[in-house]
Length: 368
Image (cartoon, rainbow, N blue to C red; front, side, top):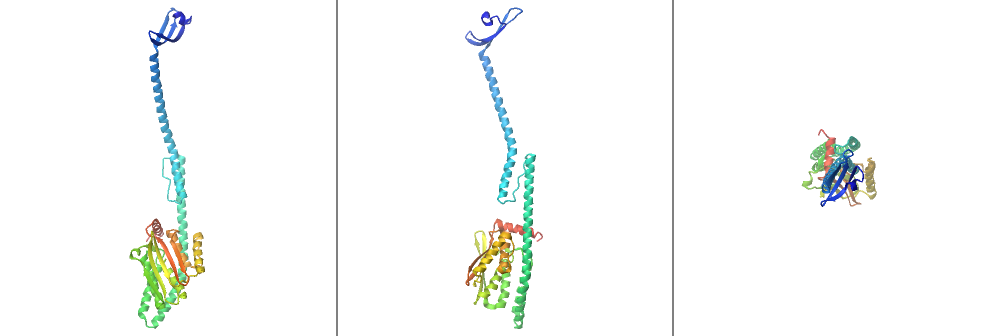
């Protein structure tokens, strides 16, 4: 066996069967003594150890993959989540929501700085929009005050002339009533005239105005008010109805040979309040109506007030309503020439638009 396996070499190894078992063998012959050392190792023992080592290696690899995956997930999330939040915020800003902000995150230095810069930019945009909005409101206020200074003396002059004529006829009670209505009329018009007031206050203001006009023109003017009690608390822009009644009387008397009837009617339309001011004169011709609608369209594009010959009072009311409540609100017209004219005022009832108007009003009058 030694001669066969060693074949004159000092070392040999291999695999053999012995006594019914498989073994790995190794032989080493000593040069000094001439002895040969022969070592047998069962194959089953080596295979079991190899399998155990393989299992350990697989478990270690699986554990390492899990740990690596967790690390990659955490790192990736820290990078992608801020980007995803910013993308969502940008999408909302693109849709017109300037109140949104990128939430504070534990992002990397660069992404965190980008989020802060983006939020600062939105704050600046909102501030600029507010400044421009306030500037436009102030401009409208100045123009409307100038308009008042032109209209009020003319109305006062005519009223005082009527009161003088009535006093000479000995109608002291009528003169006293006119004086009281005139005082209430000017007190209401000149005090905080750009505020929101309950509908009932505007209706009372109309009654004072109509009383003075009826004292001047007698039974040639009839005023009918049909406003449900539950709607009289709804806030609306001050001095938004009386100019419509004044316009109906001023133009209607010239086109109505009989009694001029002015009707004010309010109704609920979904989430809106619709208030009709109707006369039975139909004084607006199609040409005049077209010019007024064109003036309203001009307001929607450049914000400039039209000239007096195209209804500056009407366009002022429409613009003030739009500025406070939104572009979907304002005035609507229905004219049947020589029959009737209806101007319908649309404002919100209980919606975000009303909250927005009240916030704007509170912002403009912080000390009230």
